Amino acid sequence: MIEIKNLSKIYKDEFLYRNFNCAFEENKVNVILGSSGSGKTTLFRMMLGLEKYEAGQILGFNHKKIAVVFQEDRLVEWMNVYDNVAFVLKSSVEKQEMDKLINKALELVELIDYVNYSVKDLSGGMQRRVVLARAIVCRDSILFMDEPFKGLDDELRLRIITRLKVHWRENRTTVFLITHSQQEGMLLGDIIYKLAEKPVKFYKI
Ligand SMILES: Nc1ncnc2c1ncn2[C@@H]1O[C@H](COP(=O)(O)OP(=O)(O)OP(=O)(O)O)[C@@H](O)[C@H]1O
Image (cartoon, rainbow, N blue to C red):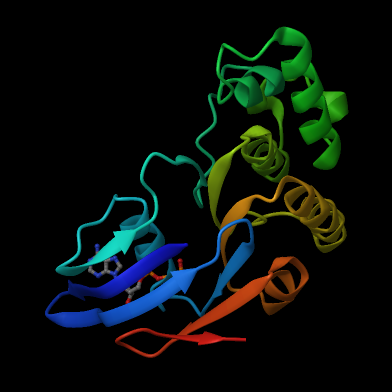
């Protein structure tokens, strides 16, 4: 269980979060829905320890591996697709196992034919899919994703989402997914939280 207890966060003399409480289930896809500016990214940043808060506790992350997909891509431009994905795997993973994991992830995001391409020669949407593949190969981690499907066309997005859902279920991955798309939330989420109001309140849908 990942718990947020009595969390308060102030921006410019205004409470964004005030005595906020929430408990998230592990091995589930937790979707956080909310309109622009509602406080989704700030919540993630606090959960990840990247943003300070005035009061409260965030519990349950001790000694757990965390993988993050930020809104921006953060790829190594001069490396090829394979190496960008391999980058997040420990060197202790054997080459054969690494190839298997990476190929599976690249098939899932439909980039297997581009494995040797330098990422700088890919389109914005293709680069986003490399980022997704990198998140997919991280095993045994809690996965944080902030608008991960940004820039993908509708049909491709749906195909990838459908495969991801199966993948996460099979692997019992704990996922925190931020989106403003109700459709994405409904398709992927085991539990869907909607953020509203300031200070933020959570509504379970
Ligand atoms: N560094 C900051 N200083 C002051 N106010 C901030 C700061 N970062 C965020 N805010 C404010 O906090 C609120 C929530 O921002 P946040 O980025 O968490 O929203 P969001 O739901 O992730 O939005 P989006 O979907 O547009 O990314 C906004 O009103 C924003 O103006």
